[in-house]
Length: 267
Image (tube, rainbow, N blue to C red):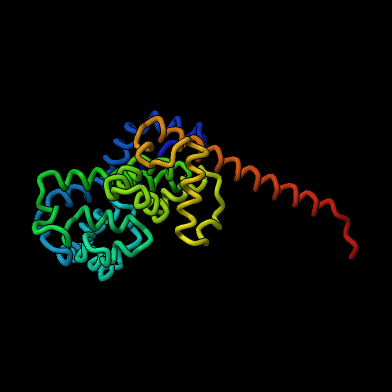
């Protein structure tokens, strides 16, 4: 990649700049030869894919397909991905539904190999939809190489949309938040919850997240987070709290180092 995202600062101020320049930076990023070659290949060939086996057998197509859902690291796990796709998401026992990471269910549902008589790959607008997602995810990754918090902030809009589209109940939506690593990280930080909260009983986690959401945002209804205003509030609180935590850790480390350096040696 030759173009690197321009991020003059971090935290919420960095987000304001990135949000304001997003479309222009995204367009420049997506026009790079490497991205264009991969997306054009996907556009020209995805309609020939009829089965999960077809998809995992074509590494270039699979790379874009996985990349569109932030699952790039699974490119070498063809057997696992084939099973995810073939079992679909209709059955509660389907592998995608039994995994804690809800992105696999989103991925499987989008392609429809296990859920539909005719897979989504045959749809007229399918290629453009997946390519659009892929370009955004790749840009997010490039941002994340410089500032992972800003990458997480970028994932909020589409992440919440996917979760609301895939779940009809409030509990189901919150469980999907808990099982989606990027979205969980954003909410957990914004709600002021420690990383150790992931170690407690899942039903108890659900209660804690809902209670904290009601306290911090005035609502535990995830549908409310589909609005730009609530998403912006979520991102703002997430970034401010994340920056504060980093500053506190850094200050604590600096203080400890100063104390150690100023302690006289008795040896």
